Image (cartoon, rainbow, N blue to C red; front, side, top):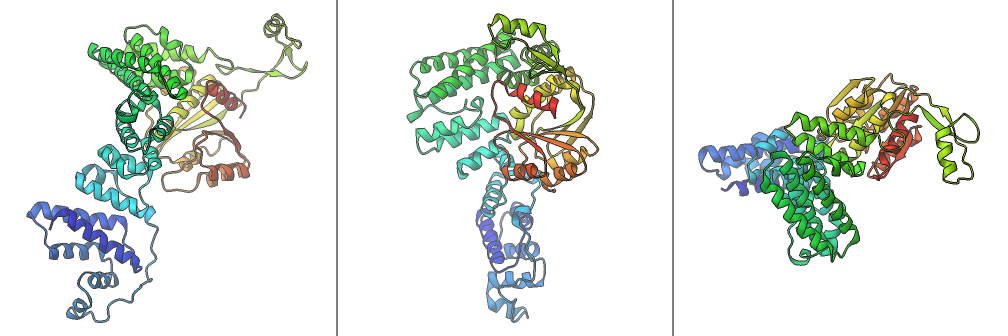
Length: 517
């Protein structure tokens, strides 16, 4: 018997046991599959009797389940021959079946699985509804071709939790199976354009705005490799891809894709300049574009001097806009407060009718900042940490969390927050409830998260509402992809809610919320 046939037979028996009320967990089914594979490898073969013995030893957790399994495998006569006349009552509801989605699978089991068994695990978990995005991401990193078996939404949810190099491969496969060019464009618009460098230009894609964006993405990729390794071959490849992208932009058919491609070409040029020691082009980039570039360059740089330069560059960029560095005043309405001579003079020069501007001293109240650093929150949380650097004087404690929780006692300087921002890795699951528990005793708490709890534990809204009832003031800052149910419950129990789009003034908005929370 081949392994594939054995695994199919095991899965069929498991489904039949579940259909008659005999619950078999995912872990038990995978244990049976592991034994079958090991037995076949050790003995060079696997008979029907061997498989039956493996099934009875792993799936039959009690006598009733054993009888039901024998009945399914061998029929009523087998029970009589074994002195088990009558068999189990069918259906049998004596055991309380736990939801299958709660079954857990250790990551090391995925890393050790053979390609064939990995496909099998992937298939049974998807059929049973237990394939969560975080688990799918680990499997797709091992075998990106599995993306072809997922829906577009399932695949994109998983890529948000994957390493960049593997995520780009999965996205290229998702786009390749799109039903039309329009569908492919919609997918491309929903992901980070830097991940599109593997998309192949063929068929309807050739000569299109999508190809221009893909080539611009490739130019950024090769420019980053040039920065990392200093190999001139990558510089040449980046220049070739950029040139082809610029040619295609001349006849672009989608303005939004063309704009993204032009932005990527500017990034590619800036990275090449930084590789040669000039940061002039990087400084010109908007903050929401600059931060992820600086993060990638910092992580890939082997030069301490370059790393220091990147930190200084980010610090200068954060100081350019309004409201930076923990501003200690706010503008007042009417004539309340102290006259701001400089601002009033500027307004007078601009011929403003109400040119007199007054300001009042702002009380900086200490608070705990909780930031989600799981894979799906990289860009948003990066902006939040950049905003925190602007309002650093107000942060008494910083809690970073994914499935692990790291609490940093303040006060934290702007320099410390910038060093943290450029060196932080965004990965793992989300344990927001655990992070909120770490904030007990704080008078003010600011949470930056999409509120999607992906590890076992209480709902984040339940934990946050207990804090609020205990006298803690909770402010939530979330992206538009926030868990709406959790957000509604938090709002109902008194949390201050802020859903902010990613735009050019996003860091300033968040720094203002942090200061005033």
